[in-house]
Length: 274
Image (cartoon, rainbow, N blue to C red; front, side, top):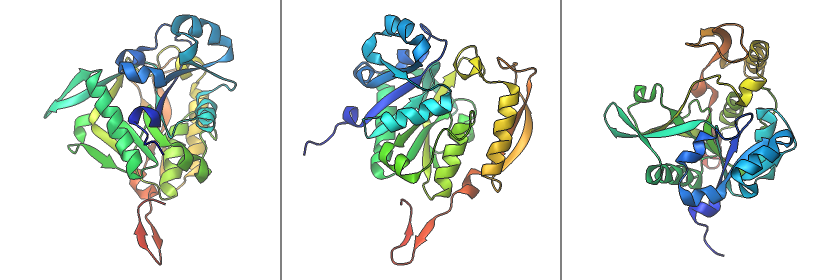
């Protein structure tokens, strides 16, 4: 059997809504990877996205809402691994202590290959650190922690666990990460690389339909699904999110490491990966 290359193993999925012509993440994807990159759009916007980016890059989802879209992508993904990226991202890498340098091309290629190597190692889910707070972690990576906006999955493993993205309308990635941790699947997040966005709650994307009421409902539902590890709190943003009434929003604090429990096989001892 032919050995798969990195390009054969992983596809990149960029859900996008209301941002045709503004899918900034594409500017940072290395050329060879663009053939394995798909902008996921709804049926109403497919014509304009196809006109802008071409038929081959557009994947049309029959479902709406970011949570349902992510679930649909994983159920229809043909590659071994699936990487989700938001559509307004840039990337950085550490060049020295307390310094992150914006990057694209070769360094993004190394970032993708790093994620693939971890998935090859046996991790079911891996992610990239946000730029904000990156240097609060000195190590190049951590195991068991928060992932949002940029994460990859072993597709077969994900589907066999019974974990789903579409249980919540928003905060769905928190629900997925917690569910996988509770089932004994640790994640690994790189802090050698980081992602950034123009701003949270910008026009387009889930901001087109997310409301403060939806956010509050999801926070309490997440608490009900994972009562031991989730605390509902009030947080204040620097700017008011699109569709929100004020800078104050209902959010959550999560005990990620407490949610992970190493499962013990009586015959084989401790097994990190199930």
